[in-house]
Amino acid sequence: MAARRQDRINEEVARELTSILRTVKDPRVSGAFLSVTGADVSRDLSLARVYYSILGEAEGAEKGLSSAAGYIRSELAARLNLRVTPKLVFIRDDSAERAMKVSEILKDIDENDKSER
Image 1 (cartoon, rainbow, N blue to C red):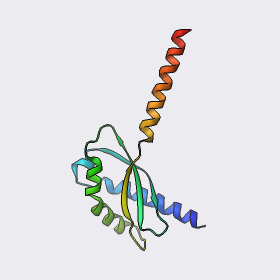
Image 2: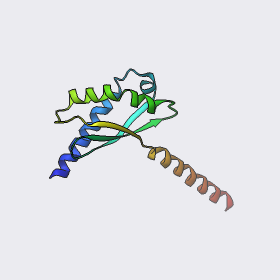
Image 3: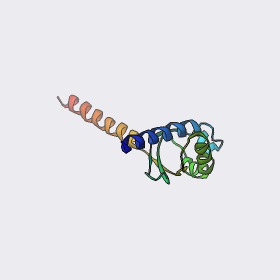
């Protein structure tokens, strides 16, 4: 039962953060194609690990997120009805980039295999 509640909190935090990131005025954040891929909120609501991905090159997006964390957290507090608003820790999720690289490698192997036949 508690696991389902935790999952709902994680999903709600990720959904709200996606919306909040669109309102951040810092050009390092607003100029980057950021998407929240997930959130992992601790059971006591003291910490939220926010996983995000960046499409393309985004110089300084990580520093921009850290700089805007206070604003993002206050917006999250206003939108969610939680006892405690978690401290936000942003973690870059590069799994999509790795998947694309693996796909390219497999495609190259397949093309080399076909050309050798």
